[in-house]
Amino acid sequence: ELKLLERWSDLSVKLVSDDSIRIKINHERSQEYHYVKLGFDDKRRGLQTSNIRWKWIILLAKYDGCIRVGESEVLDFEKRAKTEKGISILRNDLKSIFELNENPIVGAKRSGVFEYTCAFTINDLRGQQG
Image (cartoon, rainbow, N blue to C red; front, side, top):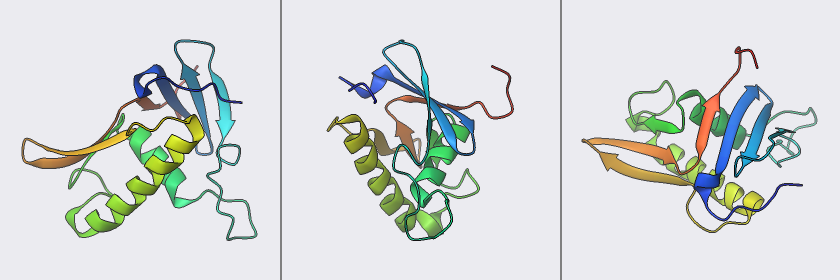
């Protein structure tokens, strides 16, 4: 069971494998969660597989919580509308999981480039020791 957040900045997420993240809240002991436990499984298919929102978690972790339009392999101008929809759904999922109504992923134009930035820490530890 996840502890509730008071603010997004209290949350640290580490991607430890293609199907698991390690969550730490308020510098307490971290705990590992599989995407199914967090509700990121694709219930439309017979096989156990992650849904598209889990792919966004992986992408955000890969880019340390900040993805910029035109600078990642997935986020380009042609896919902007689909990206906005995906991020919006992921925001709602995160708000529901952690029972916090503030926006966990902020979209804004900075220095002429549109970017999505997490209000929490997220990193990709796949392939690293520890």
